[in-house]
Image 1 (spheres, rainbow, N blue to C red):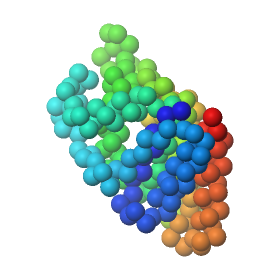
Image 2: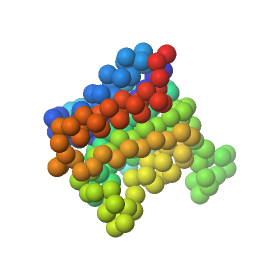
Image 3: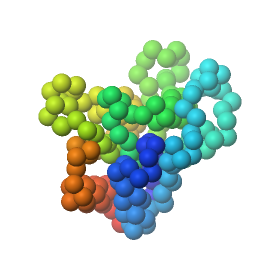
Image 4: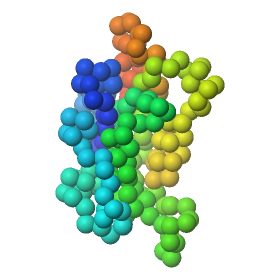
Length: 198
């Protein structure tokens, strides 16, 4: 299967990168084709210019390539930290520019945009791995789970991806090597569950 994997973390030595590397290794062991993007390393431009907004807009080749890749993905995996209850801006910009009408969703004919979109993505599964430095109990009690709502309801289900899984690894800043290795084994298990060997 074609699996699109994106990571949004500026530090290549981060635990987020360890998650991404573990994910790639497991996917390749299982004979999946991996399309990998480190958005910071690639210096992805997150700014959506106004002339890109119309569904029939002419868009740059780099964005066309991302759109084609996400359209053809059988599975999508995203790795990012929880920053202020949101993805890093570079990843939000990727969503703004790539998860666009005609690629990820459309509206019924005659609908001027006020209706419920029709999802176009063919991916059957999306996985999001997050890291955070807030204990889970406080996150839920004080802030709620904004990332779950964003990725599951506002993006993937709306765009036609029905199966969604998300794990949050916390607290990273004080975690031990043993804890991180346990988390990476959990990552392997999740990837194995949703994208087993072909």
